[in-house]
Image (tube, rainbow, N blue to C red; front, side, top):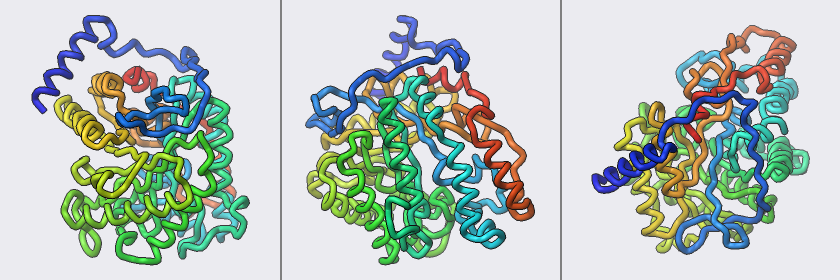
Length: 417
């Protein structure tokens, strides 16, 4: 660690002397006009753990998460935090009890139609990104009992969203990583899964069966799509800090590792039954030490992942070194699926670039979360869904969702250059 830290700091000094180690001056949104001009093709992992296209050319994914689109996280949302663990599921429950399933679906649709549009994907390209990570949850596709929302998948709102996104992203040269942010039953007790306090995926067979069915249906549908760069099997599994009771295994413990890696094995093998093409990503929470040896398990074309929220330079170095070591050891691609490194984010960016770390920034847009969390931010008076009328809620989400109503975070964006 000390050796790598010294090397990284030397690199930082050298880059500074060359004039590229300092945080660039901030610039307004209108000054960004990047265009992706390469021809897209199916990505894979080569023998050195690098992503390559079908011509063998190295591709480094540098993107942004479009969280809060298909799965609402209340801490950066527009609904009051009625409890500390209030999540998308709770919002659906209130809306459904008040207005019924049809009107609740229309509220979700109105928000989602406006929160991410073609203009947003065009803007993501202009900002210099070539990838979006798409956090979704099972309720975009399925009912709570694991049955499909529609008999015909072409009419399913979840598949219609992803179909549309693939079409638009292809137009702008943007790759997509599909991220199972909320699995049936939950893959952790954290509210970011869509409902807090469960973590039932590993022990409740019906939940795992539904997850397998969802992933295999996704893989079957998109197996030939080169716009889809990878499948991210489970977001932050075993993120159970602060919870107790059944299934509250602490991340990194033998039980948590065994449960997670068993689930990974089931999901990997199920996807490979229908899709031999796409990269599959395994997340290590909160270290790569918890991840399985791919060679022992017969895993191929895989990308191992961390989320790096460290603010200290030494810890940022340590995490980057973890990814470098596992890439060299197991010849897997490596990926920083979510990051926010605070005041040292420009320093972190230099390491990510120098070490060819694939990465997606958290997050593209936020409400009420403070400027540091989004490239576009908006403070709104949260609407009380327990008392507001259906008409008021529809009008509210329509009005606030478009990016035109958000403020561009030029300071945060300057750290990414």
